[in-house]
Length: 292
Image (tube, rainbow, N blue to C red; front, side, top):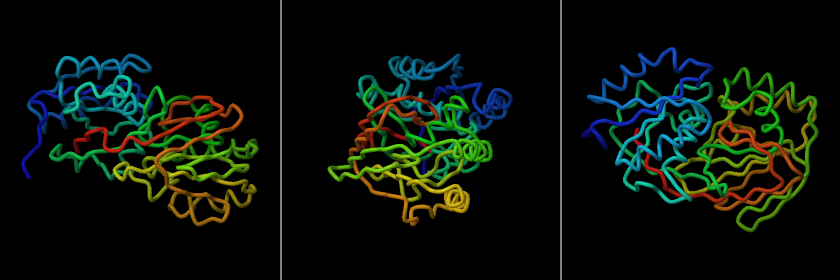
């Protein structure tokens, strides 16, 4: 297969703080990897939250056709949002690559993207999920997951760190009441968390929605009921194996549009914490060109 080069000089948007600073420390190694595939790269380093979005928009307005996100899921979220203004693509022909270098890298894991296998030789269209003012790339959840991320801070985290914090928060957390509508189908109840997934993995390796795919045009909605502490501990390994959906207190359905109502809940999307009483989500099929 012929190599697919959208630009002779792609722009790498690097978040030096991602991975607890690991990206900054290993940038020369990552740079050498990119230069083994491209004759030249343009380097742009982020300086704070949402800066990657600003850089991506600036580069695309100036005619760049290939941008590489270097960091974790939070960096990827910001860069992907930079491809759009008011949900309209700035440069419809431009492509995005992801060079995983964060703590979780869950979106890349879900697609099976590993640095050693990356050739930047083919493209695929991936879905994004509209939240109104922004897109998310991988997973949004309300409830327990939002509580964990709010305590850990911005960005995704390794599976061990996330799991330990999840266990700590679980014993203090009480399930909340949610009303969920997915493509007209409604259900409600008290849940530990309600997850809307575009990809199968979150929380540093948890397979919360094992059949979710960012290329199928659907969202996977997973609601985890009020498990007892013993049930939670017993079933935590199933969350990593991707077999939790068979539990009788776990609800799963697929939809293109999702509405969730609750009382001022903490949530997170791609590691970014937020608070809301209602959310409206809709999938945007194949809206982003991913170069792998």
